[in-house]
Length: 322
Image 1 (tube, one colour):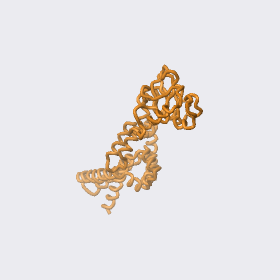
Image 2 (cartoon, rainbow, N blue to C red; image 1 turned 30 degrees about the vertical axis):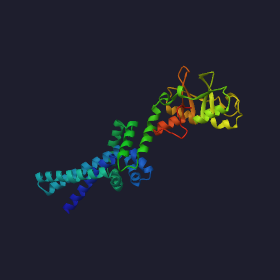
Image 3 (tube, rainbow, N blue to C red; image 1 turned 180 degrees about the horizontal axis):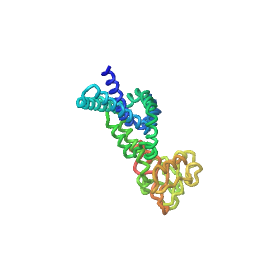
Image 4 (spheres, one colour; image 1 turned 90 degrees about the horizontal axis):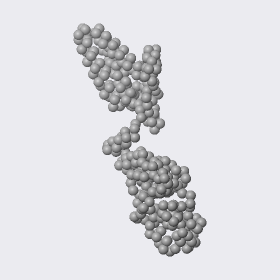
């Protein structure tokens, strides 16, 4: 009977100690995500972790209480010196080291399994634990959410890609990194300089030579200027040229030439430009400086390439841009 009582006390000590470490290695945000993704263990533990300081106080109070009772009880069975050694050894090995090592590796499984025990402990120690936890909440505030910076998140993705236990591959790593970093880049870092842009003068006639030039470059859109190349007046849509009359000027076309085009500044950030393009349903924007000097163009394809960190090429790609 004496050994059974000692075993029960050591088991309780192990539970309190293991749960204290295991449950607090699981932050609330991670548990909530896992629960929403269908993890039953996380769904069982998440309501318990919401107690925060009260849970911490309960587990520590339970652990100290059980260890004290265990030490006193062993003292009734053995002489004082031997009791001290035996109690210390049992509490250290079976009440602390082993349970904490196990719970830290399998916190979800053991935490869910022991959740009924935790609810009982919260109820039993409530008169003492709640006032203490309320005081801690008042002085220290509620438990802060655990958030990651972009650099930390990117590093985590890289670690997962490097691990043989993760389903994340190199392409997914590259795309996630690009998606997290593209908003920090400015248009001037991605745009095509105006000197490399192929464009046409608004009075250019739709001649056979013009169509040969358009076909040779193979772009779906071309800038149109008036007089000087620095004076952009619109965008020419190649697909709409099929319905236009031959030999008329670009500016006289009914469908192919559009004067309403998107304008952005070189210092604008890519995420803002992407939002504008999507809202206005534009695939190309003319880039200006603050003093309204045209310096280049940026396309939806340019931004997508920044996100996926890979150049998009097709059979019609050639030198020069439009």
